[in-house]
Image 1: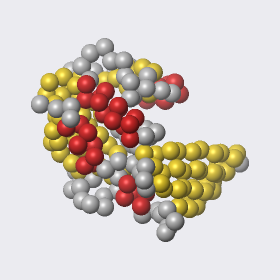
Image 2: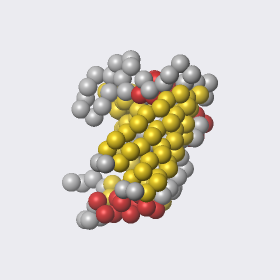
Image 3: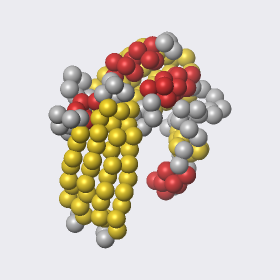
Image 4: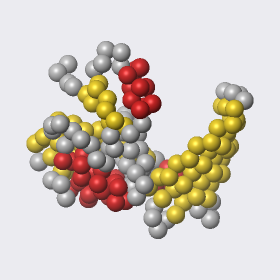
Length: 187
């Protein structure tokens, strides 16, 4: 109690999903680009959850997102970043930096096709599937980022790292971890 939450997304359908999962209206949702939030005031905590940084189309967009998120913090506020590591992609790649995967789930079949571009740390992925008799196609353009890079980028904005784990359970982060949850504090 005493916490106020706000959620930002560019997609209205995601904000509608937030409303459906929050019938008491405890979290206010507003439509904006996370890299350019129009926040009315500072926050004690900002969470960049579930690969927000990797969803940015370039390193420049990641820098802008981290700059804006850092700027939203009150003195002593914390920035929490949850993201996959590049290692989560590396495990899928063949010698030509390509990946291919087949999924069978709930009577449906899907095909994942991916290509990694090391110079830009980008991973392009396409998902093709038959789901409940309907052909579905989704794509992703991920800009991979290491937790060390996040630490360097936010340090320029007066934030220092408080913790680094491989997951929300607090498992130790190690080289090769598939993901990370990092916390930074504004000094």
